[in-house]
Image (cartoon, rainbow, N blue to C red; front, side, top):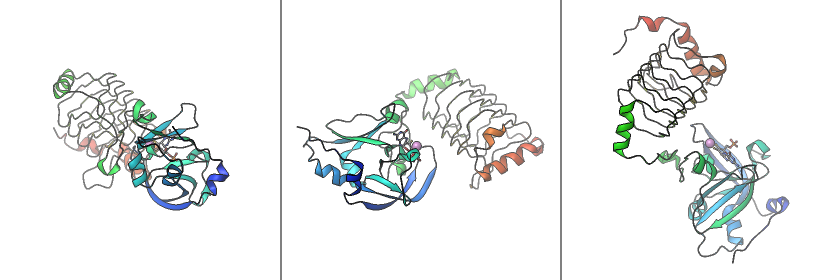
Amino acid sequence: MAHECVYRLDELHSRGTIRQVIDIHCVTRWSKLAVEFVGVPLAELIERSRPAADAQYVSFVARSERNHSTSLPLADALSLGALVALEAEGHPLPVEHGGPVRVIVPGRYFYKSLKWLERIELLASDRLGYWEREAGYHNRADPWREERYLAPALSKREMAAVLATRDFSNRDLRSIDARGHDLAGLIARGALLRDADFRDCELRAACFDGANLANAHLQGADLRGASFLSADLEGTDFISADLRGADLRGASLFGATFCGESNQPPALIDATTLFDAASLEQLTPLEAEHVVRAAQSTAGNNRDYRK
Ligand SMILES: Nc1nc2c(c(=O)[nH]1)N[C@H]1C(S)=C(S)[C@@H](COP(=O)(O)O)O[C@H]1N2
Ligand SMILES: [Mo]
């Protein structure tokens, strides 16, 4: 028989809180290191609830319109030192960061750290959380293994067939491995291509309008004349790609990299590469400076085309 415990906020505060400093890693590639949280160890609340012997998973449910939730194997949540947090960096948690109570799960992508915690449920079998179910986020989410997204279940043969058509329009091809393929003229309008690997691809005049290329790898790709109108390019890597004549207007560029800190050459951008001001504002200062300077130059035109 399930045993339910109910806590008022002030009761949680008086339960004996601990301080924990953790590194935050969001699945879309931003990190924030050494953030201090104060809260009640999940282990303590679990112990008090005297869980049934078959309790294998813990599901955190938010007070939110879509009943947002996320889950973990109970043993993982406990061994990682999950915290029911009340304060961050010396202040009560603000609502935008999940206050008054959120979960902090160290050692997992931050989507396992649920905001606006309302309920903790112990389950015999797993129940996929919101991002895991709706967006295909990886259910274990270990950042050291880069477990960001689950690849859809496509066989090698189906993958080869899709590549041969050069038509990805509106398809779910998350994490597709297309590295090095000749995909010139690819139509990928509205395609779901998170985390896709297009390194060193021939993608001249490809159309990615409205596509989701978050965290996709486009290093070294030939993207001359490609179109990315209103595409989601958050965390997309364009290092050493050729972007002359490409159109990136209306794209979302948070966390996108064109020059990075790598020792590889930056993306080839010149006055024929189109951006708009709103997208450029989303870049880090270093990236924005590089892109703006390159987009004003005609230097790229004088370089030889590489292929
Ligand atoms: N209830 C709820 N919790 C959530 C989310 C959400 O959409 N709803 N997003 C997750 C994701 S993807 C991240 S990166 C962090 C962001 O936390 P922050 O807003 O404090 O940076 O919250 C996580 N917890
Ligand atoms: Mo995230």
